[in-house]
Length: 91
Image 1 (cartoon, rainbow, N blue to C red):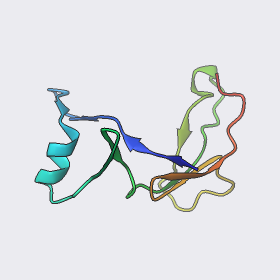
Image 2 (cartoon, one colour):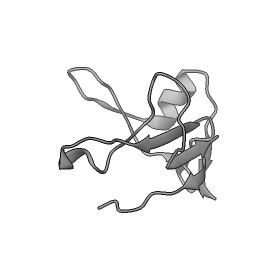
Image 3 (tube, rainbow, N blue to C red):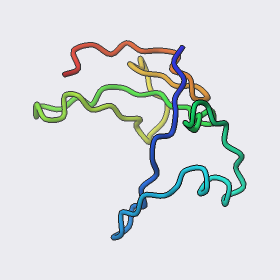
Image 4 (tube, one colour):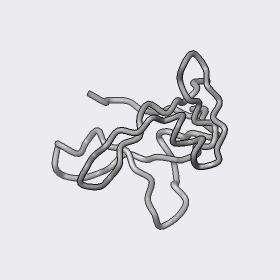
């Protein structure tokens, strides 16, 4: 299994400010688990499938559709752990 860590948080406004991850999480009442200086993303779960599109520039993108359950996910993450990785042909 692979642990996921939160690498950075960038505001999605005009400033694009990078936030101090630990400080930000603590200010928002979350006690992060820190391993070797990295914040473990043990709250994160998602199922991804490949983005299928005719344009080659999108061939290596993954996404989680908003309309519901992902059938046949290529990448699955549960509570910060990669539990399924069937990714192939990524460049």
